[in-house]
Length: 205
Image 1 (spheres, rainbow, N blue to C red):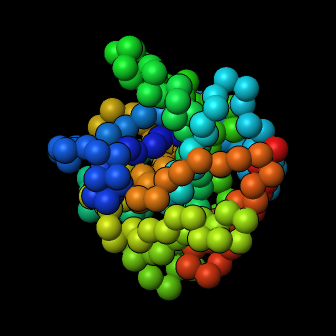
Image 2: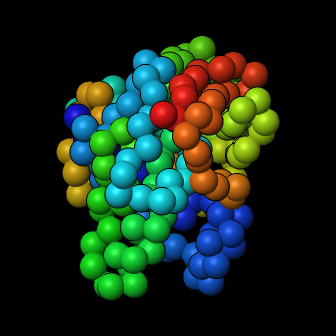
């Protein structure tokens, strides 16, 4: 299983992170399968970072084998969505970027790709580009977004990815985070919602 993730896919998040130039193509990175955290299991704060930040995202599940998929057919290649968290060791990422080196370990460490319960696309009242999602921390809204605000829509992202990587059943796509990212702390209780439907529920330990 591959975990694809898209960076800088919301205008407001680009501004939040002081990015002057918007991406002309989807910005991709990958996480290893050991990054997956699911079934409400706790996230254990890693000892190598002093600032772990949440990035709430809509996650898409790939449902069939594909290569060089045309955008107009991309909707055939996924069958379910959920709310997920792309955890980032921000202090580690900043240092690695300043040194001009790769920063994958700040994004791909164990437990850094949290996923909730999946909802079949067929059960969605609206299309995947008309979904509201949010993160609550200790029962307070910490981040919220709407898929209509994506710079690159889901079908376009899938078509782009398939130019370089073969899509396989079970692969996951983290589609980018809106503005409002921030730190987590030990004992925080995180809950992710798709509309009013809670799909994600876990604690930081």
